[in-house]
Length: 199
Image 1: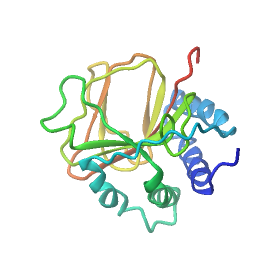
Image 2: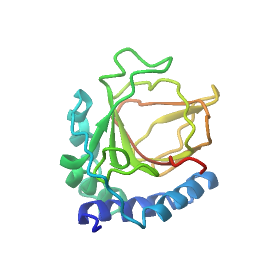
Image 3: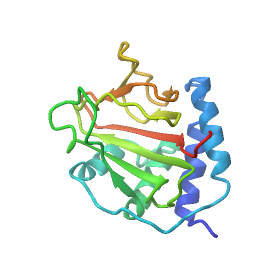
Image 4: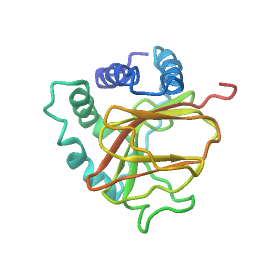
């Protein structure tokens, strides 16, 4: 199959961002395995186009980067170009989420189940949260990595909140309890994870 140009463009930009030395070694490693799989297009045609309230904040979250001559700017423009094809979802379970967090966040799936390229061996997407939103504590079997576009904080295993800084990120090992929260501005981070059994 031939991959659409806008999906190819986003994958190439995201791959560069996930190679940053600001990421933990484990995060770069899991990302490398994700992008190795993404060398082969795969799409079953399933789509999830339902939009949620937080989707209306996408332009505001992208605005600080949209004209930048950087990989962040290129990624922002690629996300905007993909908006009509994204698979949207949100979490409604977990503990310690802030009041109203369900309507205050959304995930955009680019490569993954019912995303712009619907597949089941990897996931590549982004998370958007409104200001002053705390995402609930949760865990999952797949290993994952994040890269921050904005200031924001993460917590792992009930530890201290940390801000990796713009361009920095985190690595979540399998079944590692974690959470994230935004500050004064909308939170935007891209993520990738391995989902196929045995990886």
